[in-house]
Image 1 (spheres, rainbow, N blue to C red):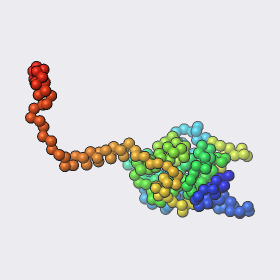
Image 2: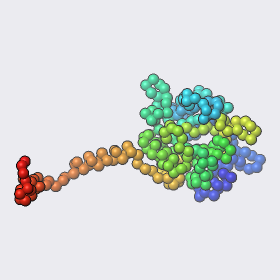
Image 3: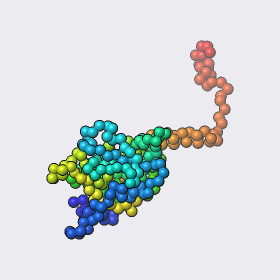
Image 4: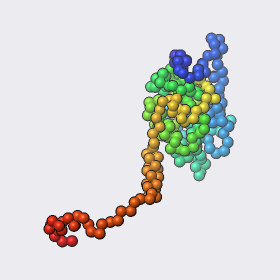
Length: 273
């Protein structure tokens, strides 16, 4: 069903789950490390995406289960039978060296993700070819779009992600836009069972990391509208005030006597100062 919908779009054909009837694609060979590298490239330095991994139903686990750890290729443990997530933004460590998905530690946004496509968001509404597509439960997908240039300002990142949410293209989620997580392709979904009664295994059904988009291409391709944030409006208002204060205004001298007082005196209604 998903393949037919994407074939109908006026965009390049999405990478198919099967190349022919007998030969499946190599998507199953893409590891979580491959997936992360495809989005972020070779990660160097202290700025890193954050991964979260735990067992059980995500809606029932404790808050501490959602605490993340920085992704270090070849060192950060991710077990296939767990719920495995990745942030699509990188973050800086705080003074103590700890990583948190907080705006004050935000470094850059590398990709945007649409959640619950197929279940809450109609597949036919997606009008831009995704860089990846993960089936997170039966006929329900997460779609991602890799940015050609990472967004390094948190307000601009929030602006883009908020526009996607306001357009109804993704589940709003519980956290702020910059701190959102998406599922990794090699993982289970603790909320859903397969037809065999086992925990649902996530499936990478589309993978084209060469598809990278500018912010404008995402705005136009997804048919969304960017709106100024409250802080941007305040910044622009301050700039306009500063600009007005430096204008060469025409000087109008004050009247020598208050015209209201003059009128009262002339009508003999003026009593006292």
